[in-house]
Length: 191
Image (cartoon, rainbow, N blue to C red; front, top):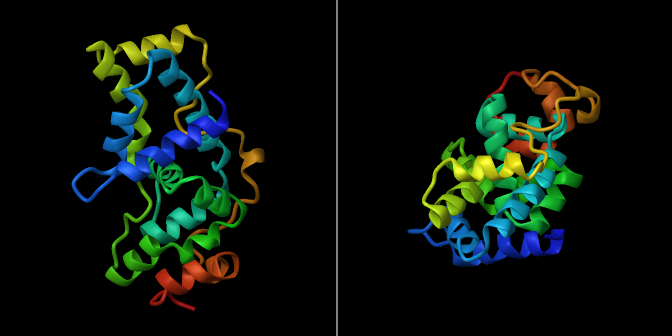
C-alpha cells in the first residue's frame, strides 16, 4: 500500500465519522472491507507516519494540550494527528504550534478539555478490523510478526532522531517554542 492509498483510507473514515460513530470506529469499518493483506499494509504505513512524528517538539505540543503527556499518551496523540487527516498531519509535522489553529484544539482550550487530538482507539483500528475478518483476536499480531513487517510500539527509540530535548515544565521555554499553543493553554502558568 502506498502512502496515497493510506491517506485515502484515513479520509474515507473521516468522511464516515459522525457524532455517533467516532473516527476509529469508521476506520475499523473501512479497513474491514479490505483483505487481511491490505490491513497489514495499512498498519505498516500507519507505523511509518506514526513514528515520523515521534519528536520532542510534537511531544511538547501534546504536553501543552494534554496538561502533561506520558509516553503512552503521546502514542495516542500521534494517532490523533493521523486521524486529523493528511493536511493537518503534514502541517503539524512541519510546525507543531500550528495546532493552535485547529478548531478542535481551540474549542478544547476554551472548555479546558485536555483530550483534544488524543485518539487511543485509532492505534488499534487495524487489529480490530483484522479480528472482525478472522474472528481471532490474536491473528493480527501473529500475521504481523510472521510477515516480518517492522513495528514499534511507541516510535523510534533513538533520542538523536527526536530533535532537541527541552523542559516541558518551563512555561517560558514552552511560550518561546510553542507561542500560539501556549497562549491558548498556559494562560495561568507562571511567567
